[in-house]
Structures are given as C-alpha cells and as structure tokens.
Image (tube, rainbow over all chains, first blue to last red; front, side, top):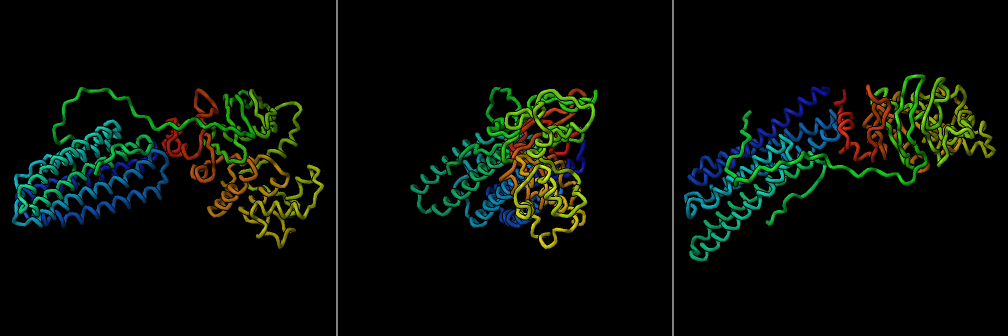
Length: 221
Length: 287
C-alpha cells in the first residue's frame, strides 16, 4: 500500500463527514422535539448551533481543497474529494432546514399546531432516514443503496402532498387557523427539502463511484 | 467527535433481497483514432534475450499530443524510440510486428533511417545542443538534409515556433550551451522543427527543467500540436494530464514485459480509467 498519509487524510475526511451528518441529524430531531413540546429554549439552541455546523462545513471544504492542492489526486480520489465538497454543502443545508423548523417553533411561541404533528413526524423520520442512508452509501460507496434512497424521496413527497391537502382542508373549515396552519405547511416544506438534499447526496455518491453525473430523482417541488 | 450509528432508523417496507451486481466505473467507449500518422502494429521488441515490448498496438493521432505513461521499465521509452528506429543504434535489438508511418513500415528495407528521423524528430530528456552557435544549431540538420532555402528565414521561423526568438534574436552567434536549461531545450525543439518533421518524439523533455521552464515547454507543445504530431514520454502524471490529448498506459510485470494496458482520451484516463491497474497507477497506489 502506497500513499499511506493520503489514505489516512481521506479516512479522516470521511469520518468528519459522518460527524457533520450526525450533527445535522441531531438538529432535525431536536427541532421536531422543540416543535412538539413547544420548547423555545431548545429551539434557540438549534438556531445558535447552526453556526457551528456552518463553520464545520467550511472547515471540511477547506480540508478537501487542501488535499486537492497538496496531494494532487486523480481519478476516484479526485471524484471522492469533489463529491465530498458537494456532500458537506448538502448536509449543511439539511441543518439549515432543521434551523428553519426551530425558527418556526419560535414564531409559533405559545401557539400549538392543530394536532400532534400528524404527517410531520413521519416526514421527519423519513427525511432523517434518507439522510442517514445517503451518508451510509457515501461511506460504503454503495450505488445500489444510493439509488434506493433516491427512490424513497417519492414517499416523502407523498407525505408532503397529504399534509398539504390536510392543511388546505383545515384552512377552509376554520380560516382563523390560517396562521398556525401556514406554519405547519412551512414545516412540511422544510422536511420535504431534506429528502431532496439526501437525493443530491446520493447523486454525488453515484458520481464518485461511477464517474457519471446523473439526476437520480427529480423533485416535484 | 460524535459518531452515528449508520443503520436505518425507521422500518422500511420489506422487500425481497435482490442481488445487485457491483457497479463498475462508467466505461468510456474505446477511443478510435481515425486519422493516424503513426501506427504501432503488434510490436514486440527484445534487447538480446530480454523482452522489452509485448504485442503493442497503438495508433498515434495526427496533429495531436499522445502521452506514454507508466512505471520505470515498462517499455515506454523503448516504444518511443522504436517510432524513429533509434533502437537500431543498440546492438542485439530484435523486433516483431511493425511501426507504420503513413502506412509504410519504418523497419522496411527501403526506409532510410536518416530520412525517417527527419520526418520523425526527437527531443531528449537532457537538452543536448551542439557546442556551436544558436544559428548553427538550427541550420545543422537542415544542411545535412540538403535544405536550399533562405537560412536566415529558417533560423527565425524555427526559433519563433519554438518560442525562443524574442529571447535570443539579438545574439544568434552565442553558443547554444550558454543558454539556460529551458532555453536549451527549446533550442533543441527549434532544431527538430527546422527539418520540417511530421512527428516530434519527446522523451521526458522537462525532467531536467524547473517548473517555469517546464510550463513554457508545455505551452509550446500545445502550440506545436497545431502543425505537428507529438508523442511524449513523461513520468509526470500532471504533465500528461495538462498537455496530452490521448494517453497510453504501459506496464511490465513478471508475466508480460512492456504491454499496453489502456489507451484513451486523456480526460477519461485521468478521471475514469477503465482498467484497475491504470487507476492504481495514476492514483499513486501502484506497487
């Protein structure tokens, strides 16, 4: 085995990507808890914590750029680093969606959503699972898994549609609830976008393994 | 550092397990060279009893740069030197197969090696100007080949094409050996150009040069490729990636000496090579 140092640096980078993914996942979970429990302290912590995720994303991007400059990678090594730079951006934006939900939680303040979150919790679980699996696909260089995750986005979109129909129905029934229902819609939009971001990560995984750039699942939104 | 459990967090619908074949790297379509000025056809070569090339077939595209890469001892310089029969100068060399220059086998009895080397010039690893003036360096080959045109024009045109004219025009009587290493190499290129070759072979032309001189030679190669076919042997993967239109990867192992492993357009060779041995070599994991 040659290039021992470079291999070690790549392994560290991959580990750091997993760590960033873990932080984004945690942020989504916490955001949903803050929404469910009306926990404004937790919501503020998520908003503040997003700065650290952003900082780490830049750090990883910088790390990848340095490896390109210093190690002059070729072929699959180069694809891995380029894919990593895109993937950390997607993870950071997933965390932005968690922050968005936390901000909605703050805007709701003392108001509660009409019912115990309904489709939103399932959307969150699906979004987290998709992100999780997309990072697994990245670590394992597993194209088949990446494609399955992309296919899963349709299920998340279906939940978004169901939530949308429900929100519209409730607005018609009780227009005084329009404000809080709008927040519910915004929350579901944030969750739906997490699935799109996970799909983007998977597209990068397919690229780093095969060298092919392809759109794996076009979002309807 | 927080670690995450990379297992699915929610139940997914049960689906029957389906065996998925391993996903290969995207295979570029084989590169076909339509307009080849040189064609190496099933070439094998021995130095005495030692085999150096095994059944190499390769087409060299006209007015393009083709790089030969591979580890030391893989036969790339031997292959290059076969293209203008420089190997003839080594005793005990034997070949099978052929090298065709515009469809004529360069090993044919009727081929004059001197005329062949005019048509297929060579620039070596170490700059080797004659210990004569810059002007004489340019004119030497032309005179040997019976050039009857205007000498001043030939000197100026050759030096301009080699991007050296502006640096030396005020003193063409200066010794070629008094130039810097990069200038000496460009003088050698000018000398090669002066006899109007069709192909220029370059055997690690920048290995003795500093990075600035190297980049100047690379820029010059791109410029020269408009009028000439260039074949370059280089140990620098970055150089091959920067200058070559096509790249050939060669390898020797215990079983087969000097074989061509993969040939393709440079972009694919350096981003998505088809052969794992090429991938291992260009990512530095060879051996």
